[in-house]
Image 1 (tube, one colour):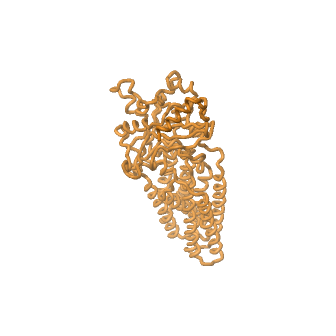
Image 2: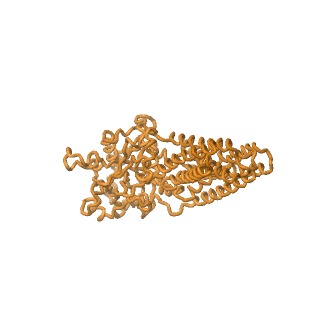
Image 3: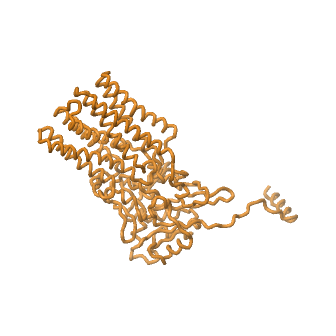
Length: 312
Length: 231
């Protein structure tokens, strides 16, 4: 699949935003590390909303006809893309009610209820983002429950690093935030490793024989019928060398998980403090972006069978 | 009604006439234009609803070239319609034709990801997805004589490799042909239940291609004379 940068940026930014918001709510409820002050909570919440809104806006850049983007809320009952949009839009007012009730010291039930519902919707929205890809039977590398699991784990991992940075800057007790981040990052790394292992073997996938129905003998492509390229070759023809993909997987694990993990140790040992937390956030987000790029680059659509691939 | 096409792989000669006729009809039809990018340039490309690829089956000396026209299969379980967030893609309940409402499409490409057959192509100039309409603006046209109320590709095929009809009617020509010739749908393991069916190439005896038998003295003289003339 052709990796579209607007979609990569959107999924990484909004995933981190939704993750940050949910974890901020948890930190607020349990007053982790002493608890953030009113202003700090609102600023953190606004940063999360900013990431989400920015991501959603950037996702419209890959539309060829953005003037009809508002119609995307139409098919909630069947389309995961539509569901994602609807859930993100329902999330927004609830999140704002939560932040406003923090700011104006509203009754606790309002603050907790709106925060809880917004956190649930954040989870559902990121799950929907993953399901956009996971529901496609045409792409073996995506048609897996590990995909929404990865989207959620990575979104929450990026969010936890952002929250840790907030805790460090705000001068809170960092231990609970380090523990939370370490736990989520470990889960995310393990899920990603299982995913990479899983897509390594083709399993029962379509072949050029089932694609053409000529199953009694070997089939190979003689002529694609076009001289230059087509929409299909542009959109689905992208292929990454196995070696390069392997190298990028190392980058994902080193930048996305190992380096932030090391920075957690540094923050714990009070080396560098803020600087270490910033490095963790940047490395985590860059790692997640590389992971997302690879997620698209490694996906092989079955239409490639008609363009000569023996198996997808 | 379940309208669709039958393509006879045994007969198709790979002339691309169906693709040209399709482009000609649909470029000025309800879903047109079918934009061309750099039609006379170094990298010609553009929107087509029907593409013909050629494959080689088996290996020498048993090999056979199969010309393979593909357009929208008008699947019964059309995932392109399911995933469409705007409702631009729809499947008509009355005849099973899958269409795209050009006024609603936002060009997100998601339906093309869901289609295993590569039937959907984005038109960069209009920013909308386009696909085979089964010539819906032709097959119901009361102004046309009844024998012309067929998709342009079927009408034009010089080898009669294409048929159009109703698969719900067990006695229609398409249903009967598919039954008799063991027609099949493509990539059945994905369970999209494509309506269009393909007829497999017939098994034919292998043509011997060994060295020609010698024709005796008369033949040798003839060959010698031919060589002289050629010089």
